[in-house]
Length: 108
Image (tube, rainbow, N blue to C red; front, side, top):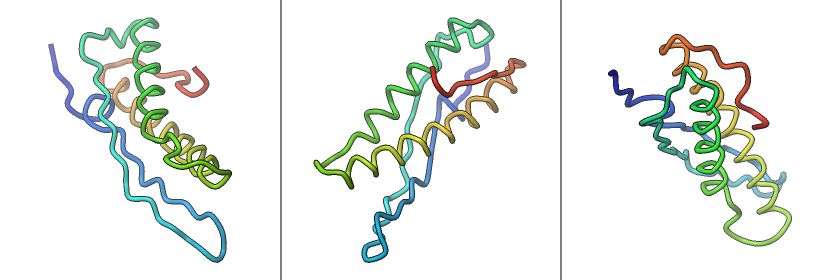
């Protein structure tokens, strides 16, 4: 059995750069999340659903607002959107290497 230490199992990374206004353009450091797909049969719907839940959970934890307020909420939403977009691309690449096609990871 091949063990993949890349893409979903090794890193789902996103640069997560954002701007909150013309006066202040803070830049978030690049963020890397490691999500294991160990023990999952990615050829099955059930295995892909578990992976999608793991990814979503990791993204939600990583992009949770660290402070209160509308700016923090907006930054958190942007972070989650960017991370999920990147995760979808990387998960599709992982599944392609395994001979499985991904219909959609987003929205699950």
